[in-house]
Image (tube, rainbow, N blue to C red; front, side, top):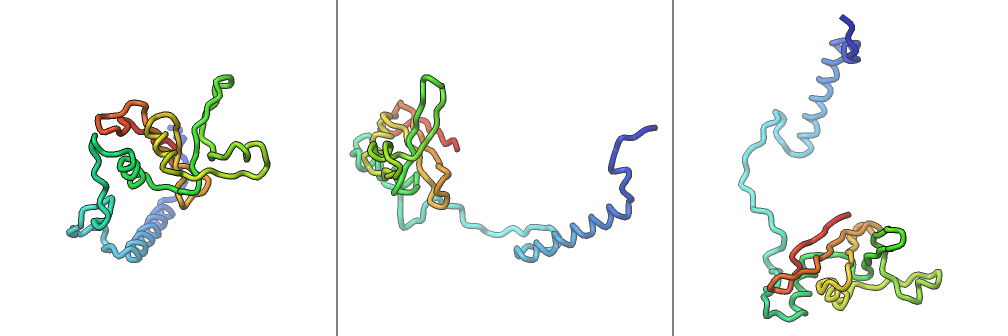
Length: 166
């Protein structure tokens, strides 16, 4: 019987040696992580994960809330760099679309770019559906994390859907 299995060419003692080394490495790594060496995980009482610390609760927003309160809630939920934001663009002629750093009109004509900050007015236009913007994550100056609202809003004036695509 012809077997096309490459593992059959490896001697059994080499496989057992590799398994032994992997088990030793797992034991060493578990020790560094403070986990039991036998692979069992002890049940500990864990505090439930929290999105926000208790000392900074989210703003309460209702349909009667002002735009400023809604913007404050949005900015509390979606944190990013304040000194720059991304703007969605599309080219109907080529069908291309994407996000680019928002720049002033003057800097689009010159070589020196002047990036536009993420302001409350930009967030307002974003929530109103007149402009789609993206947030840049502070630890990654070139990788944006996007939150794009659908154009339909709920009773509270908040977007009903989010697009969080990289």
